[in-house]
Image (cartoon, rainbow, N blue to C red):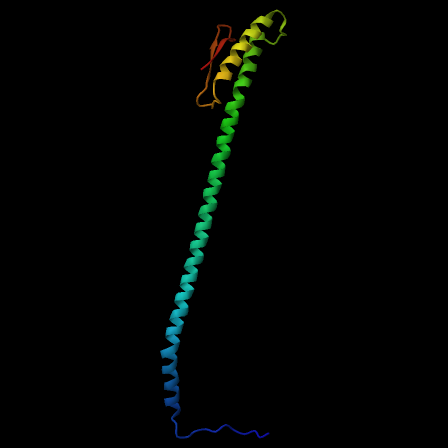
Length: 146
């Protein structure tokens, strides 16, 4: 195997060869680089749009879940509040004592409460209020459900 120096053409001007290579690079390299830059820009815009949309959807779904949780809490408290009020009314009616001779009164109050809440739809705290009428002694004289 023979090794030797490469053949150098002495008839070609080295500055002319460098000029041709530079012209070829400018003629082909700049358009290819521009296309690569445009593709990279489009990919960056697509990635940013995807991230912004996914963040927006996540925030929207979190807001929806929080609103649903709040509404469920309001509905449950509206559903459970009337029985608790009825127990407080019966406790105030009995003044902390046993039924004893007041059994007829408790049955009357309990029957009217059951009749009222059986006919009413599930209420929310915004639609039902309890108004207490206080006696001069500072004890509730009567409790009315509005």
